[in-house]
Image (cartoon, rainbow, N blue to C red; front, side, top):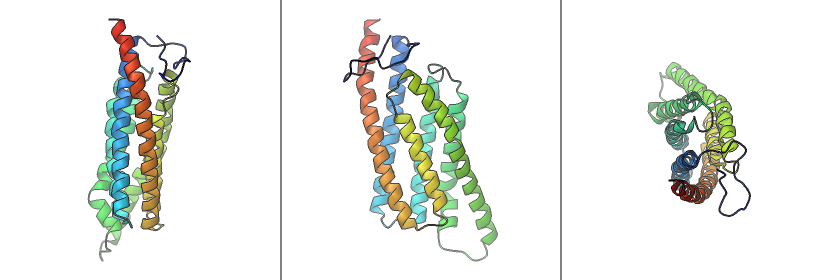
Length: 225
């Protein structure tokens, strides 16, 4: 079947259309992931705004919180892998990397790296900084997986940019955390807050479009029962 966006008259999928039930499951899964990411982006944007001027620890923890939610959403979205002709591996690797980076940064490392300097811990600081920067680098390298996943999703739903929006925001956060070692935390905080609000808006708009199509695909799916 061919999914049509309610506001358009043109076909919304490419050749190789999916059965009604598979397309409905795909749209529903992407909608839920977009809602989760969008709410989280708005929440961390508001957190950083209200903490203005934000400290480096605030920015680091806000980024970590988004990575954890993004990673969980990515792992959960792996259920659509077969629908978009992928294995679950890219989803699982991408999700686990994001969750690991978030958990590492959310805890003690944020205080150790960006809190008050503690004499005698220089070597520990270097090791922790190296670990965090390595995780940030892996996060940025995982953009390759995001591109693969997004391309396959858009082969089925060409107008959906929700996954790409979430991935781009995650990359911005990675660059922001790395920049905390050299730039003003207050400046990075304002950039992160603005990016979070923009990403949240984009994700919510994407979820709204998916919701319209979810209703359309459900109607089509029901008619085939």
